[in-house]
Image 1 (spheres, rainbow, N blue to C red):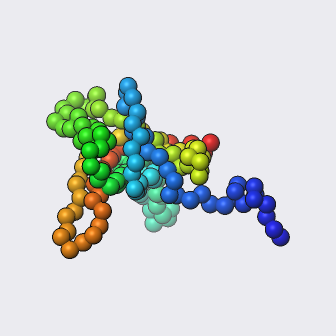
Image 2: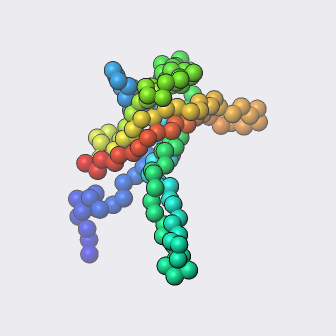
Image 3: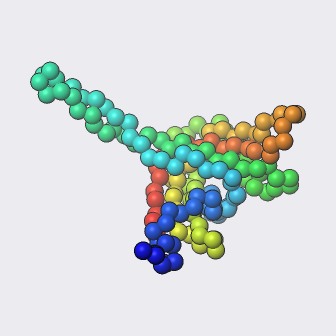
Length: 162
């Protein structure tokens, strides 16, 4: 049976190479090109509960608090890029922060796009804080592209399927 082009388009898995990353500040947003985004997952801590008569009832595994999201963003280093200073400024804004109430967090939206660049679905990382900004590895015998890495921890993840 031959499937129509529309049926294939609506039922075939989406390719993961065409996406857009937008970091949302209180006053503005900045779309930055990253070559890799990993860690978009939600996970619960668990508690193992044993009743006093566990020999008779066994044990239960109960979901506890949700674990913080750990996201890694990688991008190629570009000469004279304003986005490089944006990430560095964001990282520096958290440095030495002492108030537990008003830590400067940002939201990050990752949009999976079609071939025209239109959003098909998106993931919104809520309350993100940069915890590591690493420069490229330098290897004299290699020919790899210079890649910088930004590790982020965040409160939660929302998925929008529209």
